[in-house]
Figure 1 (cartoon, rainbow, N blue to C red):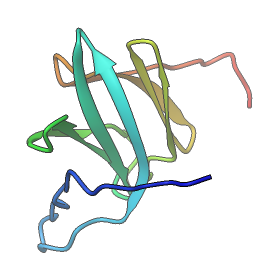
Figure 2: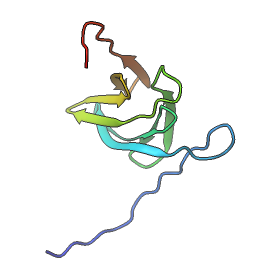
Figure 3: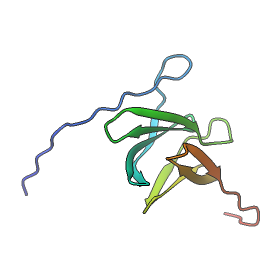
Length: 108
């Protein structure tokens, strides 16, 4: 097997209040409404959204619990789901909004 890798894009890490870039904990490529995105979750519970060309679109507060890191992303068709500790929800990349899902009767 012969594999060739070509570097084409670079995403700049976004600094927090003190200028330090938070630790990246999750990464995904997603598509909604025909647009493609890079999505980065960090240790502060925030989700950064970049367009396919690498330009920054937004940084969303995805968690309600302070200090909860984004654990993972799940991408299926045009849906983007995140998990962060006991929290989870959907991210709408077109509207740049987060919708939390609560399951009060579910005990994991």
